[in-house]
Image (cartoon, rainbow, N blue to C red; front, side, top):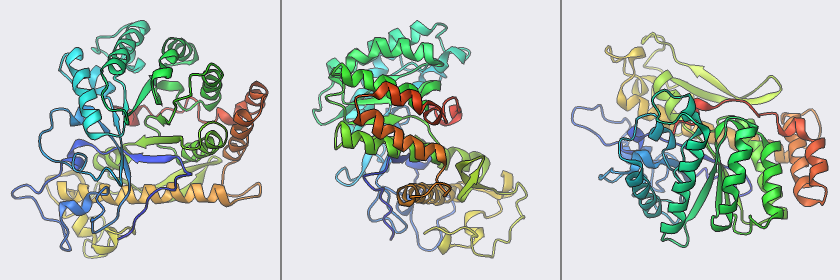
Length: 412
């Protein structure tokens, strides 16, 4: 059984499973898994899985709160796995949560502390201003309520070993700056920072803000930085460079993580999987494969054409039985299998991209130039007394992913 744990030096990629995957049990009449496998084998957090083990995930409290049955999240081995628990902010403003906010934030903190290692304070995403019926129409409504929620979490938390993250939001630099000025003083009392909103991938903007916080003594307790909903492998490699610099110059134990619901959202809704990595437009990208909507497009008797611990065991028909009542012939069991396959492929691809960046010593290799220069920039920004100079000099590289929207991957 492969163990594909991430290297501690790499920014930690977190698959973000949906509740259907996390809560999976074999239901009466459901097609069983092939090759003697059980639902437990699809649980990539389980060390006894017959397929593979990965040590980390992100899960939304919006899915967890109120769930009474045991799941792969609530039964995980906490000594060998890491769980970041998001607050479900998007579900809160999109109608997915109907519980009154004062009650919901109590439930979220309790669930985070009971089952998680890192938690994100309940925020009101600035995206709510663009969501009809969210109940929020002004920027300061989002900020004011998030501040109240954060104050509640700080005053009510009970676990000393639990990392609680301060959420940074904003649809543009002006909003993000205003949000930062209001929320950054709370960082003295918190161990983590979660970057969200439309500026989250602007590493020029956020390194500038983090340096300001460092100089003000606000990062003395910082252990974790999480970037919400980030699917690009190139950006993940950029974050590895930032983590290396922060460990060298700020805190040797700090961890940076980022999450993606792509192995579940894209796979189950659109039947798109990853073949590996490719270069496109001077950047690293996942190389996708779109299964045909024609349910008979592939020969079901042939081996599944993409390699993974699960794919290598099964013919294509085990994944797609040709269900005549579904688009493309997929059924619930097949889509669960496909998500397990995709987690493995994405984790492996991201690890490969990180190892390549560490190994290359020449210009013009497979690692994009903006990533190479960003790694250089991070070391200078955090390791010298001329942070502003280096922020200006490397700005275009640090902003390579700024404005690249992952809104569909940040629906929390």
